[in-house]
Image 1 (tube, rainbow, N blue to C red):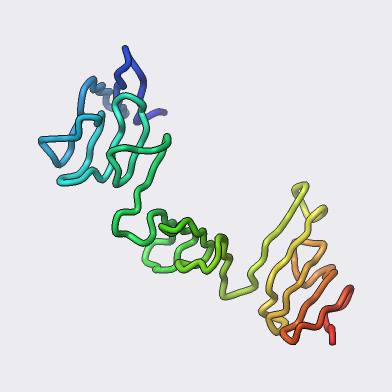
Image 2 (tube, rainbow, N blue to C red):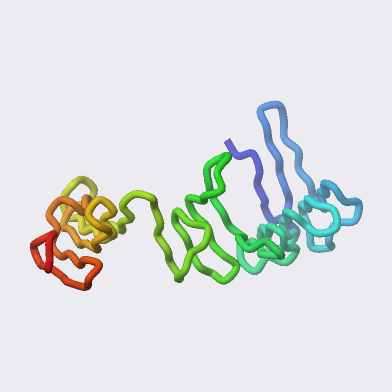
Length: 178
């Protein structure tokens, strides 16, 4: 069931809102929270600035933007985290994108272009098929003195092929280099 759709009719977008009790279509502007929506708006939600905007000519969606650059745009504004996904009631995100374009999985403060963080073993898996075969995993094993490992499985403790310890020693085929 489609509850919200945007279609084009004679170079103008039409907003259609559907529910089990009926359907409403808007040709023009639907504004919530403002009597003076932006001239490019099909749907505008917000007061002095658009919190949510659907462009009436392109159908593009903007969050905190009245001029979305792509089909879906989120503008940073004064918020350091324009995109954040997390569990209810927690301040630790599952996924975040900072205003500088850094991506964090399990952290709100990515220190590189891509940061993976976890209180338990942090891993990155490469796979060519589903199931336990054809997998390579690399990461930091917190249960083994924070050693960096590469394993030919989805578990760093199984089939470990390369290990580097904190002193810089590396071992091939062993988890105890040195």
